[in-house]
Amino acid sequence: MSKKLKPQPKLSVAKRQPPKWQHERNLTLVVWIVIPLVIALALGLVGYWGYNTYVAAWTQPIAKIGNETIGNATAGNVTKGNVTVLDMRYFVKMLGFYSLYSSGNTDATTFPYQVLQQLENNELVIRAAPGLGIQVTPDEVTEKINNDMISLAGGGGNSTGNITGNITLPQTDLGKMYQHWLDYVRLSNSEYRQVVEASLLTQKLSDQLKQNVPKEGKQVHVYAIQVDNEGNATEVENRLQNGEDFATIAAEYSLDNTTQQDGGDLGWVPEGILSIMIDPQLDQAAFSLPEGNISKPILASNGYYYVIKVAEIDNNRPIDEKYRDILASTTFTNWFTEQRNLVEIKDYYLTRAKAIWAMNHIT
Image (cartoon, rainbow, N blue to C red; front, side, top):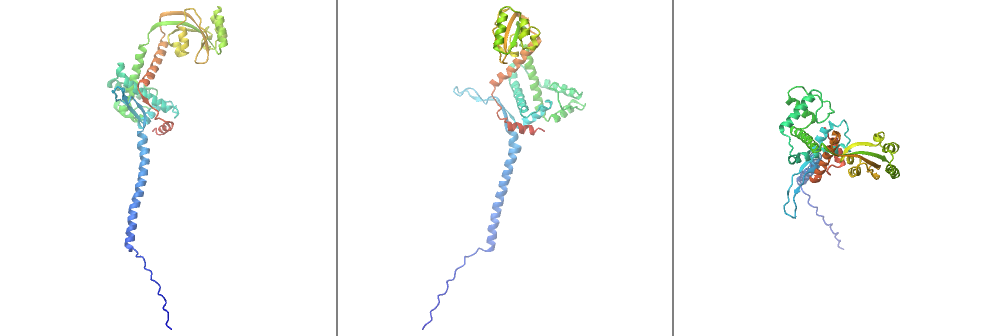
């Protein structure tokens, strides 16, 4: 009987392995590709962080002053406007400068916005000066700086304000004194000269507006009684209309301690003063009442009721200097309000977070 042959097991063919040198080469290629990518990514992240921290943060706009376009698109006369951009770097510099005059009142909730308004006002004055016929020459700026340096060297203040740093400049030549001052306030020569120029222009604008306030004009001699409710006001009016003495009723009813002892006498006032000091309605009533007449009760914006009497009218009376100053100051404030309506100002870039960041970076 023949033997059965056992089937031979099939030989498995081993997969061909790459040579060791090829494996090492592939690994090297991976290392040379992946590692540079990782490094590039890390550098990119660091660069992005650095750009945001040290470049973008300082160059971001804080305010834009001026009309970006002028004209009407429909009429086809639109032109590129004149826009001044205040960036963070300049803003932080000016925060540091104005903080020297702040007497320590540099609350981040208000101080940055006060400084921004000052910078905007400076720009508005500089822009409007040619049209107002006022100017400041470079020599005037230099003279002002020299006088301030001499004053500071002597231990005094300067006309920009009372500085809180108690700096004493070396009593050498003016050039060295001025450079010492620039180092102290951390401003360049051009930046500081612009501040001085704006300050001088603002003073000239204020002087011009005061000159426009008349030195004499119509005035009324007014008496007033201030009460806190309509019932008392009506009772005061009725008693006055019945002929009772104004001074007696003022002493009995008036809540205005300033004039109560004077029988409610406000003195002679020019038109506009009562609007500023109390309420426009009182001003209107005072200059519309005939001489000797008494008004109806007037509810003012401060919540009080007033009954006034026009005792005398003078159409050509010299205006007290204190009232001229008040009228000029109000005109000055109104001028900036009008300019802000004419010149486009975008200052919404200064968020609360940016204001705090800026205050933390004052050097």
